[in-house]
Length: 184
Length: 363
Image (cartoon, rainbow over all chains, first blue to last red; front, side):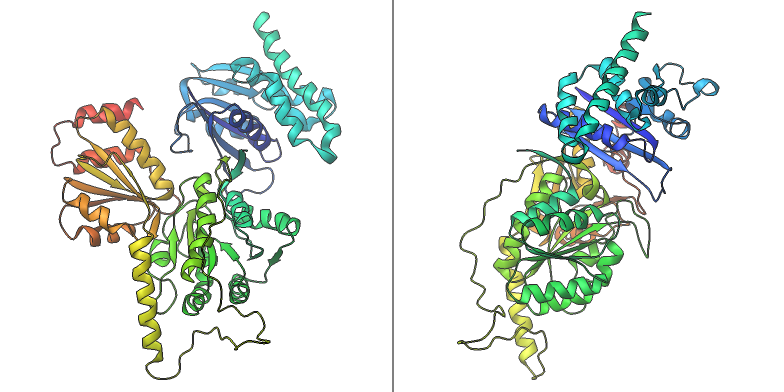
């Protein structure tokens, strides 16, 4: 099993944390993992992209030439990275900030999750990344909710511990968004 | 316990675990995770962290701590390492043990902040003035970064010599699981030269200046004897599939990771691809390279430079077989497909070209 995931959004949308939570869960699960933050000389608000590879075998180059999964949080990231997704890949997008209709990826299995909206309703727009993470978990089931919650707990220790509840809610809302769309 | 760390953080933590308590640095991308980690960790272990006013100040602070007998380190990236060259020459000339980390970025000049291997010449041929060498170690993963930084302190103390860790932006910033399981080495020489206060004993002098005619030549002869000893005992490399190989790839660091992928893909070819990954760039693994040149059809060196290590490969091969080169510059990272295309191009028997190219396209 090898899963090549590209995560992209604007700086501040929490793609780094999303990737790190997945990478850490993979590590604890005994898998090989590489997580490469590929930042340029961007300023705040610029596009940030991360290459995450999870595998049961040794990983060679951490740079992804063709992604199995593309998780995008805003319009510029979607435009910039959609061609890196393999033709029948999996696309998870933050539909609150992306209008894919003018340039769709025809064969990709696409999930649209209004992550920014969901996060705002929960009371903190900053957890939109965790909503998307929940969606990914519901689709791929590579890790259990508990495995991710354990990692969240480790990240949100000390001064940030009161943020755990809203992050847990965000994760559950993301899972719910996918499960709901599957049933209707 | 495994931790998910960048190569930069792994380097910093390994230094702490190796007993380094004096770190001096100046920020530069792509090595900032290292200095950042040190700024938090050093106070926790009662060590000294100084963000110096410049790279030059930092390397000279290293000189001071090393002269006093402490384990000490600095780190930077290409342009910053260029600034440190005078200090490194003085450290080598004063035989002071220390560790210097270069997380290479694209050059020349200010270049850019992406991965590069274009500082090879500077690293292995001296860099500063005078006949000297630093021991040069080239990690290709976060785990190996941790292991080599730990070993670097031992090697530095063993030979009273600066050790350079030559990484690149990708090795520095890539996050991977890392375990710290190195144990302190026994039987390292006592630092009976260190400046610790001369009360009650003969004074000691640390210097690289030899004004009396003949003394400097004598000192240089001593250095060369030491370098010969290092060449005899400290060569490290990883050999993959070299037995009965038709073609052997030579690559280090990030390039080596990609070449490993080529070796894996080549298991489906009807000829055999092997690989040598130098772990010490100085001393260079000459002997194994020479040996292979007698049995293989050709060697292909892959670097993220315009062709630097390939010169050392050719020196070791001495014309016994063709030595080819494939390189990317200015932040470009080679892909396995590019390398396979190059192999197809240089292979003496090209009958398998179509099969090979199909394999490349199939990914």
